[in-house]
Image (cartoon, rainbow, N blue to C red; front, side):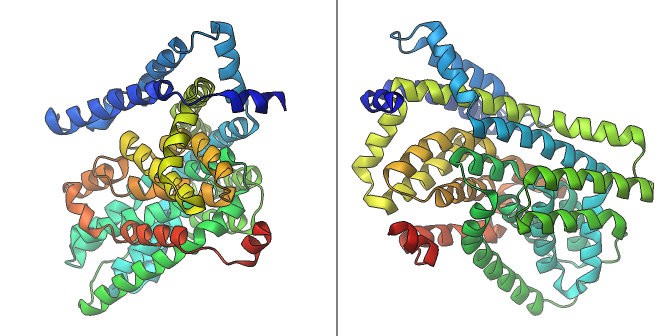
Amino acid sequence: MEEQKVEERISPNPKALLPIGLFLILYLGNGIFFEYIKPEEGQMGFYVVSVVLAFSISLIAAFLQNKKLTFDEKIHVCAKGIGDDNIVIMLFIFLMAGAFSGIASEAGGATSTANMLLNVIPSRFAVPGLFLIACLISMAMGTSVGTITVIAPIACAVASGGKLSLPLCVGVVVGGAMFGDNLSFISDTTIAATKTQGVEMKDKFFTNIKIALPSALITLVILLVYAIMKSGAEVGDFEFNIIQALPYFIVLAMSIIGINVFIVLSTGIVLFIGAGIITGSLTYQTALSSMGSGMSGMFETMIVTILVASIASLMKENGGFEAILALIRKVANGKRGGMFGIALLTSFMDIATANNTVAIVIAAPIAKNISEEYNVDPKKTASLLDTCSCIMQGIIPYGAQLLIAAGIAGITSISLMPFLIYPFILIVFVVASIVIPDKSPEMKKEEK
């Protein structure tokens, strides 16, 4: 009760938002400069300045503010933010997800799954098939970048063999990858969105599916019409091993059923080790190495989470969150206004950071305050955080997803934008989900 009273006495202080402004200048400013003003061949401009470095400098700026608190008191504020139960759980899941991603990739699971599905789908429907495959692989892998890396070369082969539009084939892969990233139980975006809002992954999934699935189905219909209008395409055969693919389907089924994410990831790791040994794609040495590499790949995300938790705690203590809430109160009108505020805040953060997980981690504590003040269901808040960050990440031409996809295809990332059908349709459904009230029995109970 005493902490709550202290928080209520915090007055709005726009200057407390300076650390985020500094981060945007360092990261976004340098990114634009090295990507568009002074680009270098083979270099992604938005990855010249490390996001960890930018946030570290921002944390220093946050420490220099609020002279009412001593240095030790500021350390205590940071420690409370980092030590939050949801932050700790999120860090542990990141490690497990990294090990799973590493072993699954080394075992050949993603490639075998994609090739198996492509062989099953009639060649005439190769383009909608690519979208479906990207959706399934991304949901199973929990990473859009990993999915694009695996499926984009296949999409290029399909486009070449079937004399189809290369930007379209690669664009639908990006859209499918973002669909799976948004819904996957082991995606870092899902982990960040749910744990920061204190909701179960399955609850966020069922809230998300109401807008993601219709968007995907409409995308699929558009692609089917395109396929029917085109003549049959000979795309060739792709090699696969069903034993290597099977663990992904088991993991996907366990996730949807709602089994604890730690159990799902542990089971997936064991299954892929077994599949890799049986098929000869793994040895004892490569299994250990791949899991270690996968976990190492999560270190930056974990460090960013710790830094952002510290900065957010200091900004909140200094009145920064109150300043944002004061601004939203001026323009927001009730619950819908609060939801639009969360959506726009998350979208802006992703545009600024070009990283959907980082965008969620930054926006999440502010979104939680908005959610509480405007009586927004935490499941809806988590859904908006995840969905809006994935939408923007799947559209911005300087994000890793489009840059990698374009690099593999040998085309510009901007040329892919007209073919990002799913993200653009998803925007419409997100807006509709905010404007049109949810009349589900569960929501009616909550309103009572």
